[in-house]
Amino acid sequence: MKRDQYIPHEVSMRSTSEVMNLIEKEGMAGYGIYWALMEYLRTQDDYTGDVRILKTLARQLKTSVERLERILNDYGLFEWADNTFLSRKLNSAMKPLENKRKAMEARSCNDHATTVQRNARNSLNVNNDVSLSKVKESKEENTPSISSSSAAEAAAETKPVKYVPAWEQYVDSLQQDEQWKELMAMRSGLKQQFYTFFPQIVENFKRHVRMLGNEGRILSPSDAKHYFCFFLDPGSVTFKKLWEELHKPIDKGKYKFEDRDPTTGQRSYCGIPIPSDAPPRPNEQAVWCEGKWVY
Image 1 (tube, rainbow, N blue to C red):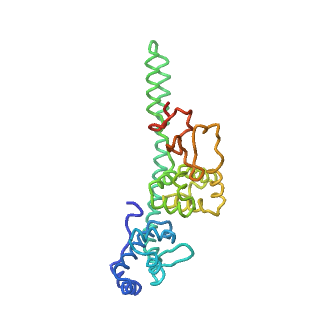
Image 2: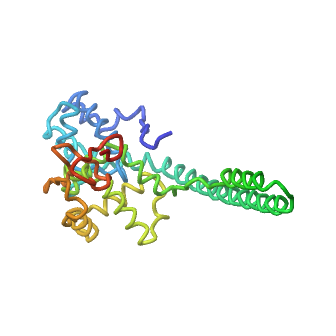
Image 3: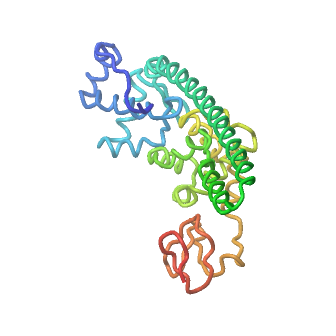
């Protein structure tokens, strides 16, 4: 089950003085907005929201920003500090579930380590069998082609599959979270450039994690979001270095057959966009087709 799939809801919730006061002043529409805000917080790191998303939420809920701010401030249901808000009620309700999740992830890590060790032993045994087979076949006369073929097939069968560490999989999964990407684009100030440079930003983030040896700190998609948030803090050293990397002068020797938008960084030729991870356009006749340059 996904972590953001459900939220605890006590049946006696409407009997609390705070909620009763909310319904009296805002009506059942206000009660619905309250739970919409709780659902939003449920999907955020540390269950903490960014007030800069209120305009987007207001459009989604077909209400006003003023009404959202009133519900956040006037009824004792939320805490608002600087540019963030949270619900102590939600944090308390989610604590048992968080403890259960951490225990499950710890068991999963142990199971994964056991599987890796078992696969390594199996691979070693297979390689030993192949080596013994090669020795036996070398002693047999008039069968050189059969021996070569058998060795090649055995080598192909034991070729290891590329392993992607779990923490990298959690980082890569962020590509699918459109709401999170919208928040990060706003928070970082990169706006549209965040989407344009997203592959490069992710690769820079991974290099940063490896350089500091912090792979073990990312044990879930939530951990990846939390770390990423600090990485893209506009006032941080990491953000400054990332900005310089994304906006460094283009090597015209490699990209002389392309154009690049100085604002968004979008590469193009003849007005046609080029994927950010595509290799340089090789000549003036080349066109981008099905993931490669054709000319």
